[in-house]
Image (tube, rainbow, N blue to C red; front, side, top):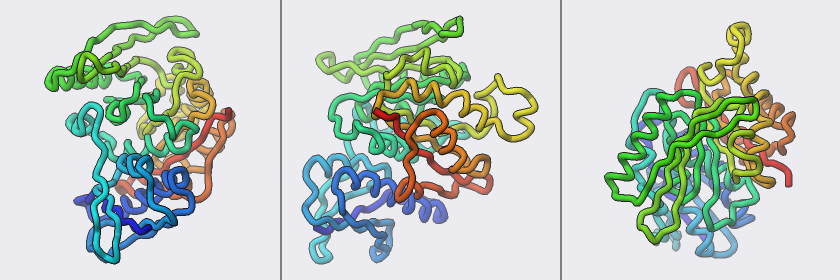
Length: 339
């Protein structure tokens, strides 16, 4: 069978070419699970970003539904000798398609890239077939864009961050969104005990579109990145997805010397990865994006392996490096917790 996947266009021509490369790597990971043996290529004949997909058998309904969640999908078509028959568009959102996009702030990571990051973690995990609600952790969630992506998948989501202002803004925004769209919801103020002493404040939303629907949760916890495993539970999450920060504010415990040497991210990951591993369920996966101009992919993978995680590399796993701007070349490292 022959298919065409039209990709979401980007106004920046340079980033558009990078986006096609990302889309191919993401699609390759998904098809390795959904349609093993399928072949992918770029197709520029239509004058728009497009991927060509060929498989021996027709994609079944489950595979088509999964592909609707590809981060850059604009439309999926069957190619019948050059005539394109529409099959599917982007998946419906459990909360609202605009939820991750409305809140704007300096340094925000694009919501489509965060959807890619979530998909990469999902299809690297043992839980990619799950049709029910999964649980996702973003251990440095900022203003929770990644959590909103997870909420649109119908998942439970927990985010941790040390910046109270960011968490407060995320809380206020999500509350207003639920109120405006008339979701049934309640908000609880909780406190989580830390194993090293003290506590972490938590704001937990429980919400559903209708009273009869199953309630989902979204939690914002004021917590250091390296305290998540103990405070948020062990073997609690199916995936961890996080766009690592490019500054030093998330690691106030580092000394001035470590910062000046430029290895703050390495020191942060050394402290945090064992806790993130503990938070994952066996078979769960982790996807971390980072600025490769500050730290190389091989080093991030070595730190993952040192924390007892199974590093995934080769093929599509090596295809996520991409230009963002002059000072940022972003990459993704992916690993899995052994069963």
